[in-house]
Length: 311
Image (tube, rainbow, N blue to C red; front, side):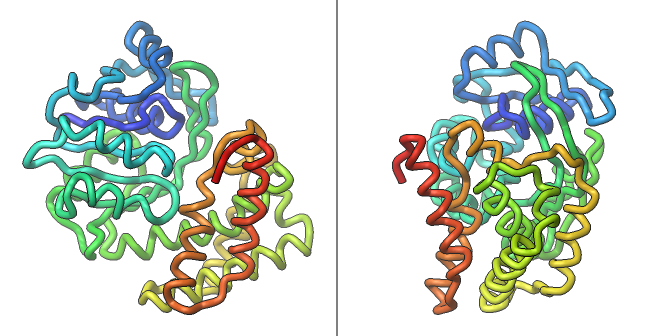
């Protein structure tokens, strides 16, 4: 099976691409970072877990998608604002039987991919694994969790099953979901509550539950998210989601920072548009007020502007 990973030199792309390659799959990492690609081709890719155990994978790596040939699966792990350019560049890898899979953060990447690759070629998922780069060609899988995959229209399929089987053989815990949109929105709720709130202060995630005011803010953000989800027919129970968020924050490593606080700390563009921004957009379309989520978007975009990032 041939699997290409867009954003393969990034943290999550390297974790998934490295483990799939180590499991014996024909993996090609595609990235615009020429130095990282050269390093991986010369030295391989290290994937380390939080216990310090390491594997050395030997995937192919390239900055030129056309050189990789047609793939069975193209796994998209780019940041949301690179999605369209990455998928357009990857079109030479997408043949009549290729499936394009997004495991990206947030909500809104799939329609962009479908518009380029074709609606019937795309299915999606969401992962609770976390990744970070310890250095060039060295990825840390800081946390392991469930990955859900399924068809956007509902249910599963042969292509979803084959991909899920590959992830399982690569060591990931994976579930084929009959309602993957519900799973994506469940994680979107988590991210909308925890990422911008921590990013404003570049806090470690655990600190969010140490302050009652921050817990109240997260609760308000979740309330808006649940209302918007229900208006779209997406099942989401407020009490269950709130309990899950608190449980996760209680057991998370004290020093762990999420992706958005890390982006802010390094003065990088965030994915606020497909997280809280996705909730604001849906609320606007459905006539549901989302003032708390809107405020998060305004605050994060203001921080980005201080870094010279235009929105």
